[in-house]
Length: 133
Image 1 (cartoon, rainbow, N blue to C red):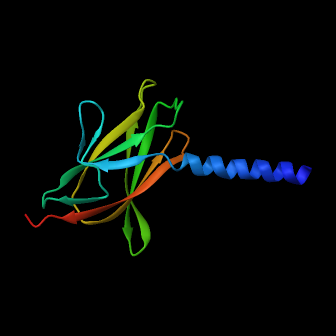
Image 2 (spheres, one colour):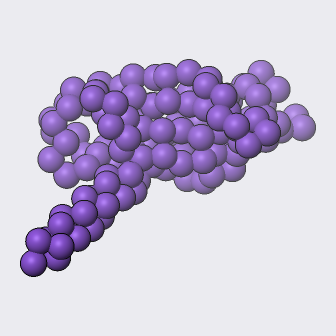
Image 3 (tube, rainbow, N blue to C red):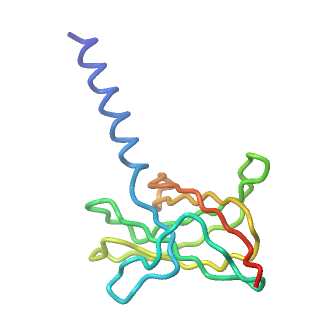
């Protein structure tokens, strides 16, 4: 009986940890006035002098933190190279949060979302290409 209980608890912990990292992180051109992502995608072309890309994250139900962090890494030869961290304030009434960043360099990026206690909430990959114009 103890083995079944232990197995159940372990399975529940794995399920909830996977659920916590499967929250929705979307990349888009911008967020409209209603709070919806505009032209979501995982591949974007940026101008020679840079172009903004918005990160749109749907908060977990009942999230009560004051902020989230977006950690940006560039993938270089299959290794994550830290690029920057952007903090975004969250108010209790929000169901989502967005942050805009200007990208200048082509490449593959991995963006993580963390809460204030450094618990990973989500991650997603983004490909940035240089526009010929």
